[in-house]
Length: 279
Image 1: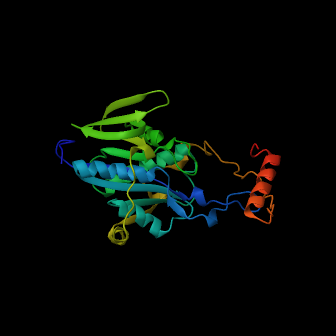
Image 2: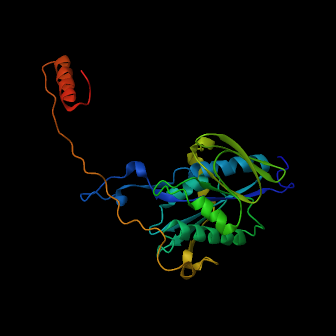
Image 3: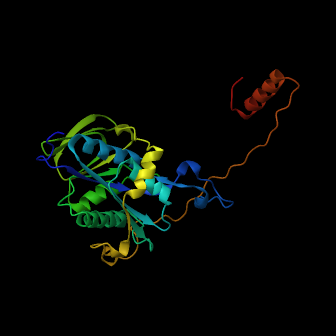
């Protein structure tokens, strides 16, 4: 293992979110998302954040911890175990039952307080690196990572496509709309990543079973030291008023014909009449 930070192992914290699977969302009769029918999953990009941390620790030595602030209903244990099975040392699930951290600013403050609480609980002198997905699958506002960095007073680099640690400094490659960049900063730091950075591992059944012996620690947000919602002002800075799906209905047209060729001709005629295809 290389001498990344003076010979000692890395301490990496992954900021995670568990969301309803957006690929399985369906609308109810009023056009609103029927969340109860969509299973929980690790949010898009957070798999990649975990993988990035694990790869760095495999190279330099160290441990990867996870923390998640979860409003309302907690994810099923099998979803939590999947994250543990990937290789996380311990997972801290912060229960936000009153939804005090319902907007990006408050959530970032809550995650920063949770990061300090996990650091104290695990007797870690300092986090070397914090990794977050570039955005969450449900809100996709891409604010949390940079806001947490501000709250923790550490440098932040977004949209990383490659991470390296050399002599105690973080080297990051990223691609923007018009250029490729290589950035360098001191540790500790925070980075956000997307799917371009790696292919997240899929835990085996044995790894999932072994993850049952790893600690998943639950804590109420109100018990997290340093998080004082009353000090953040009254009312959320961002509020979702409504989410609805556009109305749609099937035409329920039955294609008839005596032969497959005749049915294909009739189908093309209908598509041509609707402007779907040009004949």
